[in-house]
Image 1 (cartoon, rainbow, N blue to C red):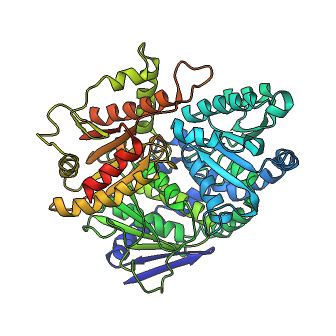
Image 2 (cartoon, rainbow, N blue to C red; image 1 turned 180 degrees about the vertical axis):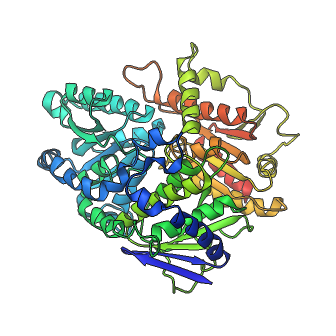
Length: 561
């Protein structure tokens, strides 16, 4: 059985048993009047406890229209940037807004070979890795415009780092001030600091957060300054918005029902594979939305982003629901067995998934806007940075349980159960995943220089299929990005995860002006702070520290081959 719901340029195809399951939930959403209530901004949809926060977080529903004013607000900084030849935009931020901007640029301006078309460039820095930051600093600062979004530890630290770099390059006064565009809520500490420094300030919406604000100022400004035509995205979203009030023929409601029916049943993992959608980076944005909004109170859906429909882990057990991005309903080939397929342009996709996740959260009974688990890790990191000894000594002094070449293995005493090789250690990590659970790999490394780390996910998924009676889903994320994205699910969702964290030696650290710690120490504090939280929840967690990053990653790949 197949159900296809099409409107506003979006097509959602639901197949097989998912049709009956989701139609039951869809009827419930319709009978509860959710389409009209949600589009009207009813903050009571998620219960009385969630209402106060929801009342301040529903502005994303209006962004397809309200964000049209951004073009005028960005006219001055955009003109100044063009006149000064600043066509290399560096975004300092975290969470959904950073991933949204990345998806916009990669979808609309990145050429097929991976380069930037039209001579523009957008670099998203949502990291504290000093190697990755040093690589960006070594680029052409004469062409660089920095956009600061939000007040995360990463954005604040990197704002200081870039300020010093520009000063050392001989910039000062008005010339230095115009190198920064700050996106912040009116009256916030960041907004006041931007005004004092003479930076361009773009006010962020007060009723939109980073997770649901893809089409708001937090998500749009950097992409627009890098040359993305935001009007195209808003037009795409507007066409879908007209269908969101409908009880049926509403693809967002249909997707929300499919997500909710999965989370209510045994299928609490959502495998996401792109199959020719052309939406570069979108799967990562959808991952942070689904995991962060729905993963709390022991409930939710774990998004598992895989490399393709042919990748290890796409085909697993029946506790998975598979979503294909980009497949046409009538298209033959691999992946047709996926429960849900979604096709449509980027601007509409943003709105589609935000609406669907908000509706699904109501059904499973969670507040989509709260982030209790993410706050736990941030507080744990802050506590380490406030310690007298500093974050780095706290972690490095702990002796490894095993050293194999360039790789140190850090685990609770007795957790390795006599393992003597990396292969044995990794097999134990896979074996320790509870039945029905998952393995989350988080790499606090350089996404560019250590890109090979992402290859651990398919290797571990393939290895797990051999060493486990029942293969477990394997996810991969970069730290500290994951703290602001699926980190909420790791702490707040069903407690059936196991964790493999990878950190690396720092050979060229970057001091943070005005702070008693460096980027490398901040990164290690973020890693260890998060590890401490998941271990406090009783979850199995192993940390692999690479004494030499390249050699260590090669060793891990060989151990899994």
